[in-house]
Image (cartoon, rainbow, N blue to C red; front, side, top):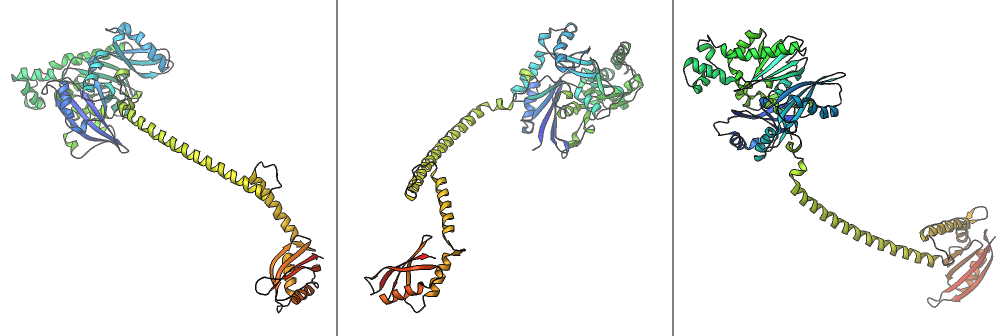
Amino acid sequence: MPERILGLDIGKETLKAVLVATGFKGYEILNMKLINIREFGGTENALKALLEDNIYSNNVCITSLPVNNFSFRNIRLPFKGKKKISQTIPYEIEPLLPYPVDDLLIDYVITSQSNQSNIIAAAVPESDVKYLFQILNEYQIEAAVIDIDSIPVALKLLNSGIATGCGLLLDVGTRDTSCIIFNEGKISHLRHYAFGGEETINAIAEKTEIRFDEAEKRNKAFKTSENNDGMFGIYQKFLGEIKNTLQFLRLKGELKSEISKIFLTGGGAIDPLLGQEIENFFSVPVETVDISETDDIRFEGETGKAWNPMIMNNALALATRETKKAGGFNYAVGKFGPKKKYEKFKKDFTWIGATILVILLLFGINFYADYHYNRAYVKQLKYETRDIFKKTFPEVTRIVNPIQQMKVRIAEAKKASITSNRIGTGSTVLDILKDIARLVPPSVDFVVKNFTFDGDTVEIKGETDNFNTVDNIKSCLSRSTYLKNVKISSASLMKKGNRVGFNLKMELK
């Protein structure tokens, strides 16, 4: 079954959610939702409204914190080991931070490594992470990753090859803008500016003397429907701050190339005049971002018709973000990290464990009973085998292994039988019987009751009609090729039938 991931972008004004399914064919956007936090009376109520649609419940969740909550520092360390870097960073950036390092959560990404490591470290007050964690936890949402706004979008552009060379990603929100500077396929710097789409709307409202909500509706069409004279002033300070940042980085030698492209995203960047003025100010092309085009991402059914990339980019980038360390920053660690699966079902595991224990106990009892019965049965068989051996071979006084000893005795008896069945030059008992049948005519009343051969002598017990016939049989056998000294050892009338029973004994020649 494909894994479902919820990308949750919680802003100051709006909550954006994108639900995707992962599979062999890439990502598929199952659903998306945009909720105005002010209309629902706060973030908690907005989350509650989102989860009223069951499709957003019980999924892997990846979310982020606003960039203005963080302090960013670029540092350089003279070693490469990740363990040593993690131990050293807090001491390196502590003098540069406005808070005690013990009150912060710090994560980092490595931008480049040779003999030394160039690192971007981002520190956020632990209280900010705790607040987000508690809100999500209240509604049974467990964040697998807590990233920084705009970072997943930037990494998508870089990893897809859309963002090349040196450039900027400007994520313009309602009141804040994230600026991510990239160079040679890596994020090199992060900055935050106090500028957002709200300033543009305020300027439109002031210029046209209409209410803020009306100006917000007319923002998209402002370029073509209103006179733009004087509108550039609302961007001057913002663009000037970005220009100063770039010049400062060049003076420090941390930015050696001129920017060649600027990417725009965020709800505040919907204003068409903003992109035009940025392009004029920096004299570089400006392009709006659509994360759905950076990867193998498909829309389910009619979902694509409602797609608004500028607003939903960050939520989609979160939903399709890599969960490994290379995927960016992550503050869902330690006590704020996802619980292990077995902890969620700890009570169930207790009952399951007890049930398994009872089953194993019953199985053990059954196994022991079978073992005890089989052991008693084998003991009885051994006793009976020993008893049979004693009766069959009474001359054997020392019995060690009756079965093996019996096999040896049987083999010896077979060997002796084969040897004793040979007469003279290889004739057998069958030859003797054939000779007897040849010598005694068929007309003679002669019935053999017992034939015994011990290797040297032959004894025949039989019956006939009278005593004269006994003498006749003796005479016939005296002419045998194999027998000699034929004697009548006994002859007597039988009790029934007036028959004569007799014994003949003879020796081998």
